[in-house]
Image 1 (cartoon, one colour):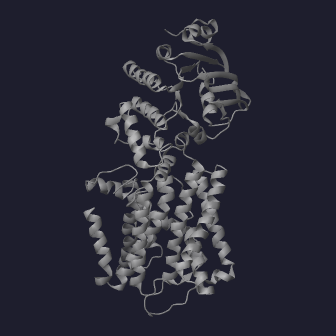
Image 2 (image 1 turned 90 degrees about the horizontal axis):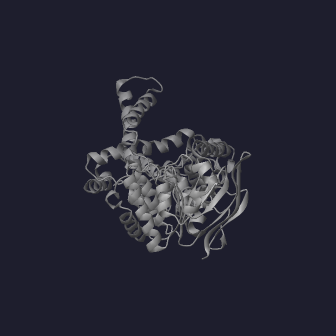
Image 3 (image 1 turned 180 degrees about the horizontal axis):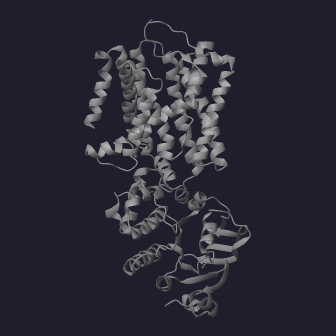
Length: 324
Length: 241
């Protein structure tokens, strides 16, 4: 608790003493911490493996960006449309999967398929800029405007920090609710959960709805932070994998895991880029190789993720399904 | 006395193999009924048909006079039937208490109320001192008890027990028998149990239904059933009573 408070203070004060580069890295860290938590609601809490979360990021990003560019409607309204679009897509995939008994790896394939369809689809939707990309006009440093999400990197930093804290609070609350217990039961033993009165379809579809809606907010942030969207990047398989890595490294199903994982992975990536630059080596793919090795090391030695191990080392009592 | 559960001409085929064939019996309210028979007799299939794991090909199931045939397991639970699994299915990563809370949430909308109820149930089954342990770390006898606790927490009017005594040592069997008898006598809980431990069947049950090759071959008081030549031949033959 003390550590968490300390971390919160450091993160709140960071823009005061850190330079632009550090703030941008922290923003990336927090973005992955956020979407990692969103993904965790499905996989970590309910045992539903989604390998296509880029779909919800992309739908959220494109929905809010299109409203802004075409109609001048800011993210204050855009977030709702974004969440609605992603939730509808998520529920449709969930409906297909759960109604027709598509489970486990096959369900994961279904989620990939839909992300791929979206990637190819958006390549051809000229209203969304097509494969040439979709651009949000950059306002310059005309002051901070929270409602329209236009402003300095510091504004974006605080927005994503608030999202991370919000997602953490929501996850914690959900996990301690009736629904949360039912999710965990469905994750552990669906048949036994059903025998004690849990409606499997409803439990699973709500997990998908919550997860996809939260992820869409990450998409809105991404659209307005970077001001450009390309289907090849936004909906890519690689992006979906990047989203899930922090949770896997930090600890699937734990509250802190996705956040810790993001704080490990993103700086590690930055460090590798830096080292490769300094060393003067110019071998394409070297960074990815190191990154891969680092991941293998973590997954081999801490298969449950870093957080459960760290929590024990720090002497925090470990409650199953609920860390911190 | 009115029958709480009525099973009427239940049949189920698996790829042409008749697992359960025209089975009918009734479980009177407040009684303990044992379902016995050799391996492969269709006992667990009958349970699964009652609990809604799969629908029967033919036949009907009624609880308190209401049709529950073909309902999904969660609806069957809501109707008032709690069940255990022969191969125990604990929520492994959750604590013992959390396992039972999930059961209690079937009736209690609030987690706090469910927790209180779960604690009372754990106390009753002698699992209170294990409440904080992860369910996967329990010994087999305790897992069996956890199965019963989780099912009980749903506040069933009928409890289906699938071999909860198998694999327990004699002292543990006696303890569980005591708990079940107590639940039946003091709270009027009706129990339908699949059981191989004949000592417990004789001690507990008011009525015994015997299945063999998916068909009912006997139905009566424990004394009548063990004297039935067909039962002795098909099932009890070598058994020590």
